[in-house]
Length: 294
Image (cartoon, rainbow, N blue to C red; front, top):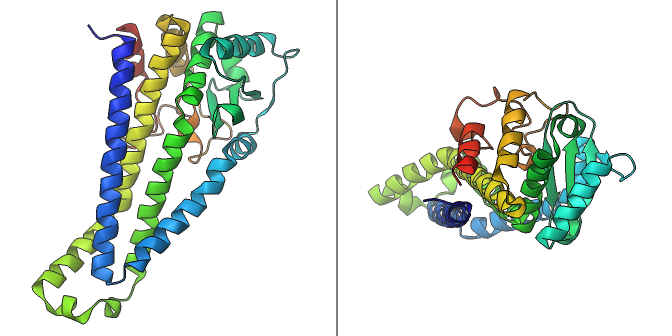
């Protein structure tokens, strides 16, 4: 019978499998473009640019996200239950207490960010704090602390770097003039086939890379659910919280695609996505079912 421990182990394996596939795809695309272009330096330039572009967003992620969401510091005088719950669960999890913020928004949601446990921030909306009881709030906070403990910001940043690399090198390739290709490649059947494959890859690769990034994001949500439930030893609390959130789901006032993957629930509301393929979060029904089957 599956338990939270098996769910956790399964999601870790699936996340790293996706990351491995992602890396292989990126290397393959880079090689294909370099061969078709006849200039290996384009690969190195694109990688360097993508890494530098995402380095700053990772290093200053907590400050950037807090600013984008309009969160403000939450004190123990104003939000004693919230503050004490974060403090107690941080001790239980063996994590430094993160900086605590609140977002003045009636939509129930929460998020965690920061490059490591020593530079982490955890925020909840006023709507979430008003909606949930003590055990449900503990479940949500344990979920967010699990994101911090599982180093999910590192995983998501690596994914963003890879997606950025694919998008940049695809754009460079498509913008290149055809006369820059090697003449012997253009004149040979093998060269023509390589060029066609490279063009198809340049068009489809950014979409495929984004889908892989979203798949990784969904896996990290399942993992944080399992880890959070293990922390509280009460999966029903988080399951009940997710049920309430799904029923009261409404778009956040300052929802952004740049920060959507950080939130406990889709900040755009349940009607934002046309297909599960393009969702940053697994369906609430699947998350609740996994928790209740433990």
